[in-house]
Image (cartoon, rainbow, N blue to C red; front, top):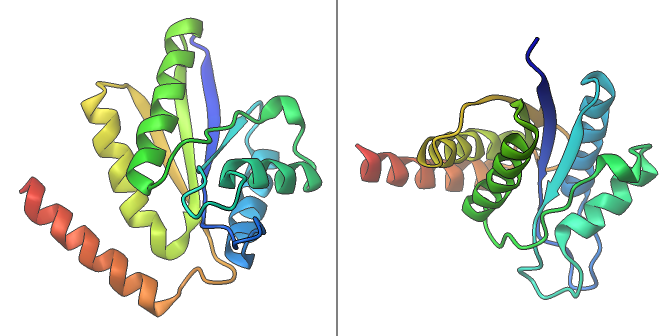
Length: 169
């Protein structure tokens, strides 16, 4: 019987200058915490460094939020270096790749971010997984609360996706 590791990763969002989480980041964490309750035996990887210089990483803030939401500390694996969504994908998948090799398990990854951010993020994770030659199953879960359907962000992500499509075609 093949063992399958289940991992939820939740994308960071820039912190306020004082290190506080936005309502959108809290919504992403809430969505991930709910999903953790539905996915038996899962670990969660909050991902995000400190691109705004708040003095604390997005991942560390998310760990605190998720613990307040009932996620046990031993279920949380931090990724605190990423400064962009591309780096989120690279660093998270490298953590997973190391776990897969060490434990010789297959992995099912659940990617959580705001609805507007999900298509771009899922595409990046697929591209990075292919580049790393990883055999990994991926699913997505959209956070649908505050900011999830921000028109400005949808337009921005659409432009980025089109530009990336032009590069890879």
